[in-house]
Amino acid sequence: MELTIALAIGIGAGVAAFFGSVFTRAPRAADSPERVPPPLPFKTADTEILLIGDRVAHMTQGARSLLDLGDGELPDWATLRHRLEPFFGPLPDAPPQEAASFAALNASGARLFLLPEGTMLRLHVQAGCLTDGQQLRMIQDQADTPRLQRAIALVPCPIWQSDEAQRVTWYNAAYEDACAQVGAAPTGPAPFDLALPDGLNTQRARIALGARGEDSKFWYEVQSHRNRDGWMHFATNIDAIIRSEVNQRNFLQTLTRIFAHLPIGLAIFDRDRRLVLFNPALIDLTGLSAEFLSSRPNLMSLFDTLREGRMMPEPKNYQSWREHLSGVIAAASSDLYVETWDLPSGLTYRITGRPHPDCGIAFLFEDISSEISLTRRFRQELEQAHFVLDCHEEAIAVFSNQGGLSFCNEAYTALWSEDPDSCVAELSVTEATARWQAACAPSPIWGDIRDFALSLRDRAAWEAPLHMLDGRSLLCRVVPMPGGATLLRFSVEPEMATASG
Image (tube, rainbow, N blue to C red):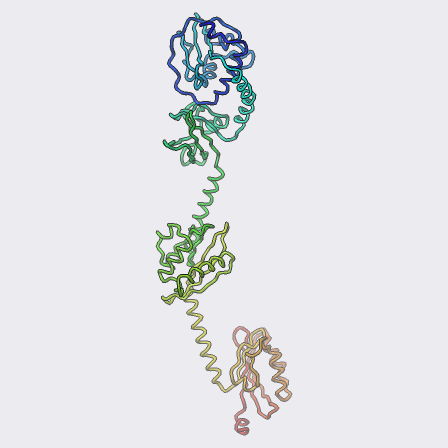
């Protein structure tokens, strides 16, 4: 048996490279310790370690290469066991008193022999001979191993391997730092609470490290990939993303509370034309249910529902309605959409579309029924007042505080033979007095009228006679009005009107 286990010079380095390539693989349950032949002679070329008591007394260069120990390092049993377990699985907590052997993990034909010799313990690694091609491949892999180990050590995200029982069998430095953040031991159960379902080869989950409800917990997105040794996990810190999502959610909640008191209905759609925000006024104005709006309907569905509920003008046909709605969306995206809806119920809504950040659209629904009713009533009263003044025999003209002609009746048009409504520009008091002056005999009141109409001081009514070139006599009355306006009344003297008749 000595001839079988005695390896040729150079095989020790090959064995070290071989187990270095196995280092990142997950362990399986170690073989049960078993009795082995009597102690073997110690050979320099072998991968052997000699312990006296609880501390290493000597080890071959092959053993140092296998365990990645420098010259002069002589660890104790606990450190040695920690270095050997990635290759051979769990080992005894204390140096064994009886001979035993352990099969290498995922390396067929390789074993670790523990051989007590009185107060000493000899550890011997035995592996089968390798072909020249296998040795060449291992030498090439061995050249890449340090670079890969340095890269793994510098990766900023935690990486670890677990077996099917979710026991951690390997991890990198970032994983160790993540465990230290929450006070967990890297060699114990993983602090990442993962549920790995059967039948899936890949899983992605968000995990929080730390006590629930605390601001100090750390968030990670963990991607898990099944392999032949169990699961390989990659964790990426997403604290910034979580804070952004929390801030966005708080901002939306704040907006919702603010918009809850607005009388204007608000509907905001995202870039996919899905409803993402609405306020209670939208429910009150449109009659849409909160359940429907909470289901995040798209823009087309919302307007279709409004049409079915007779909460918008009825289109001539469905096709034209679809074309119209496409135009509405395009106009709202470019901040050009404003429409007034006269509903069958008698209400009047103003609908305004505005572009929203990130290619979204916001629609405002405003009930302007009272405003429209007031405007219509005011217009009706104004038309009635105009009719009354048109029936008046006196020529009447009203100038604003800026000196522009605001109103005149039909008697004014007939008296001065001009229609101010036919002029594009507003007739000023200066232009009007010039025309009146040309139709009348000389009089000093024209300058007084201009000054009166443009004065901002307290004013009092006055009157003055005028004589037109056609022989008619007029009485001009100048009366101040609220807001700085001026009223002028021109009445034909009765005796002159009778004489001319």
